[in-house]
Length: 510
Ligand SMILES: CCC(=O)SCCNC(=O)CCNC(=O)[C@H](O)C(C)(C)COP(=O)(O)OP(=O)(O)OC[C@H]1O[C@@H](n2cnc3c(N)ncnc32)[C@H](O)[C@@H]1OP(=O)(O)O
Image (cartoon, rainbow, N blue to C red):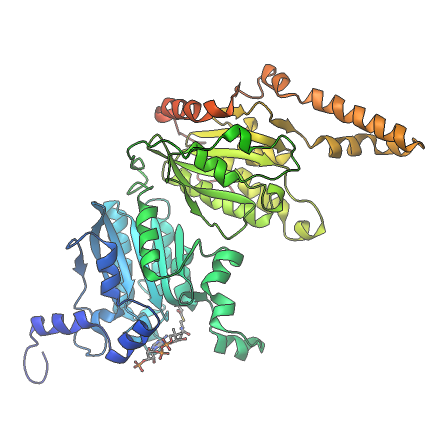
């Protein structure tokens, strides 16, 4: 009731649908930012959006929908739940009702088994409203609690269009995938002004929390895109690989032939010569189906979704073009996260190994390479989805374990005919065992001859046929036959028993 009588809901609806003041619409447009309702319109199927809480804080004229739009819709005919900040209203900040709306949509999505889409553009907590929204049982903290509880139950994907400040930065952080728009999206715990006040450091939002930094350096962002349409396209594409919730299977698609790539010719026998593992992937999976996640971060490992004869798989592949495919702290984290994601949502895993092992040296030991490596091994060991290890060229040391080698219960370990599996490469092995003996040979030519003989003996010892005869690998597969063999093996594992150990959960080396 206003002073002049009851408020007409139609007037309120009309006002709310317009969002905040014109100056913020104009400022957004000048930065290539869409109005929140246009983002939703572009993302979802026509006329499918059903909104909840449009009247939140309706009696306050300057807080339409309390700065967040929530509801359900369909994308490609499949239902989703979504929340979308309205940055034209108090910079998309969260008041008490904003928070309640976000919590409700998360709870609804979990109850109904629907993917959650977060379209984020927010200043975080609404500072003057904090007693109402911050500390209570259904305050801002409960958003993150709810997201954690929803994790692995339903897919959670975030497109970040503007700031995601302070506590607000955790909404993306708890999502399975974060898409960031270059130039506009940012994530940070303290603004540049706050950082200068606390530490004296002069920085900018872009430098400290910009989209490129997060997608290429921190790894908090997964995909860097040029504009908002590309971000929304990426959200739609991501969801096309995932089931609606953990009880369902990923959606299949009509099978397609792969790109015409001669897989055998692509992989040089000389392991010192790099090759493009992404081309190998494209030559193996259905054409156009490879959707890479984290392409700019920790590029020595490649992860992404693809389809084999229409069925969704997750690919984890070493990338010899970057740092020789050696595993580092970040590459282990990147793979761990992706393996967990696939396992949560019933996506079979294909490991393509060309890995010299984990990096060694003071720098990585100080970064905790053992802990990070163990984390990746934990994820591989705990993944109960069908998993296949293909040794494309080599798998040395703990690299073999990390790529789901035979000790990690893969459903098959396959090797190309030129593949090598060993504790380490021949040169390193000869050096490890025979360094003193070789150093004692004064004549340089004789030393080289003995070293070459030792390397040849070592190579014979790890010959792939010998390893197959010892049942280390299940088959040696010609490159041209690999795709068909994987398709057949994938089909056989559909009824795999995925029961895991009887316990609450492990204590992962995070
Ligand atoms: C859970 C714990 C937390 O989340 S603590 C979160 C604390 N948040 C922050 O420190 C962010 C503060 N805000 C900012 O840095 C900027 O507003 C950002 C987000 C970068 C957006 O800048 P810009 O697009 O230039 O907008 P602006 O500053 O002109 O603000 C537009 C209107 O929104 C308001 N606003 C902004 N932030 C908040 C906030 N956190 N709480 C309440 N109101 C906020 C501004 O006062 C301004 O309001 P008005 O339209 O002039 O009435």
